[in-house]
Amino acid sequence: MGGFEGHLYPGLSLFLYGLYHARLVSRALIRNYPVQYLPHRPCSKGRWARLQQIYYVGLAKILSSFILVAQELHNIQGQFVLISKIYHQRNFLYHKQWQHLTLYTTFFLSGCVDVVSQNLLPQRSPALEQGAQALGMFLILPLMVSHLQDSEGVELQCHVLLIQALFLLLLVVIAELWAPNVRQLWVMKAFLYMIIGSWLIQIAFMLYKPISGHKWMDDDKNDILFITIFFCWHVASLAILMIWIYGVSFLWYCYIC
Image (cartoon, rainbow, N blue to C red; front, side, top):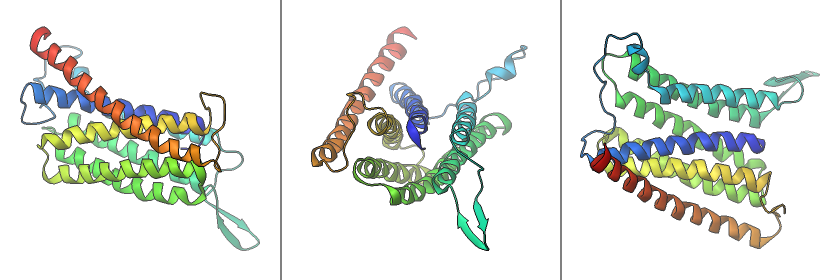
């Protein structure tokens, strides 16, 4: 996730995925559904019946992965290889780019599992989808920790806060494997996905295109301190957004729908 687009596009994808789960959670809480994911609707016999059954979130994950990979490869200057061979020496190259591609691969595999679970199996398997999410988070977290090795100052503080949110999300998705119908976990998962997504978007602007026009300075303690403050503002703002989504969903399902 290098550069402005490399932080912005994954951030938008994760934020929208969090909004999707926030809508599912609100519907489940308001209508008192015992499960977060509803079963298949009965298939009709129309021409577009099969198209109506497609799980578009999984397809969106796959498409987003291809776009992110294309963007990453486009920004690489020179030949993209794993190991250089010069005078009998072997050196690994483009380590951050390979980290990013590995991250995008987890999104792609998660999308494939969602599509298979929703469209190819006789009955949807939420456990399979949750297991794919847990595995993906288990891969992403150590990659992000290793990503800090060349970071310092503002970039380091931004990514440390991001890793904290990723660690909490890993705990939530692992707990959901054993307690899939606990609604508190549903709420936390949606909330953390939105935090991670919005914070990635914030990182993109802070590091590469500051809205104020002034670059954040690594040697300025005030800049480092305000990064944490901004992160706390993100958390509080998204908590308010979750409440607003629930309120709008309540009005929709109780009085309109």
